Image (tube, rainbow, N blue to C red):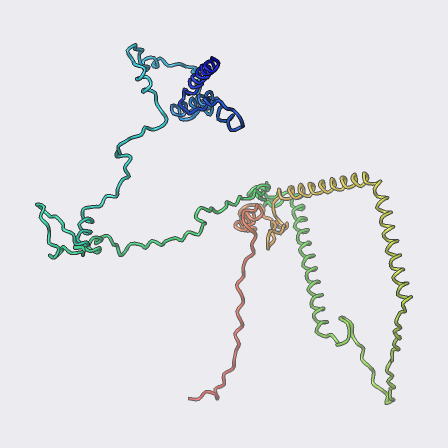
Length: 451
């Protein structure tokens, strides 16, 4: 009886194992094997049904959505509806009990395209269509039978049925399109600089003298220049004219002195004696009394050059090194002494820089104040801006009425000089015509003429 009992147990265990071996997903399973000896048998007898179910759920998500839900972002999965839509309920399908479950499953949209057993127009690649004329030309070249009207086979030996193209020439096709008077288009070679633009140079913002000048266009004349001026104003204007004239005479005298010195220097340079320095003259030697003069050549004794010994050279090197060491020591001592004076040096440097800035600002202010009165008497470029001429008459030339008044000055010159002083035009001088060579006179003799 024992053997039969064991056989029943074994039969029941096998049936239970076979029931567990069937996987819900359909994957093969080897749980029916009773032996689990070794790592290989353990690997084969592991129950992986939960893993297979999880993988199958991921595959179903990929089929329906296109990717797993874990890879989707929050914006793709959830939507926060803050407004709401009344038309949503109308767009949704109505609930119907008659709708089958299979219809619901088929109505789900899938991200994987369907498999078609038959080819469609979209799946077939588009073939290049050959025109009728090209097809006929190829048939003529291959000497294949061609069907004409009424399905009649055309003879390939007749005129125009060969491989040559019987058609109008290219000249006839393009006739009338050529314009001989049209400008030829020059093909530009791409050099990589088509998109480059010329940089715009920003104009510097500099102050102009005319923005500072404050003198009016027409100056108010002096009271002493009237035809019937007061005595004090007339004398004051005469003294100013006298100062201006005296300054001109002094400059002319200074210029004449410089010219005289230059002329004397040129004269001395032309009379230079060879062997003597410039400006030194040689006295004339008096005539001899007939006594011979003994000439003695001065012989300068040469100092014999003695070569230094080894001890003397070593001593010179030692003295030079000692002198250099003393100089370095003195410089180091001086530098260490100046370390304690760093603060005083800093304050001195700040004071000097402050004084320089103040002096610079003072110069700028003085120049600005000077420019307010105009550019009269200042050099601007190559020439000097002329000053106003003082127009005054002496007491003898004064007239007591306008009938006997003598005009002074020139109105055009006054306007031109005013524009130069106000920096409206640049200063210029009149360009005089060049002198031509003088004509030479020759005396013609009557006896040289042959008739």
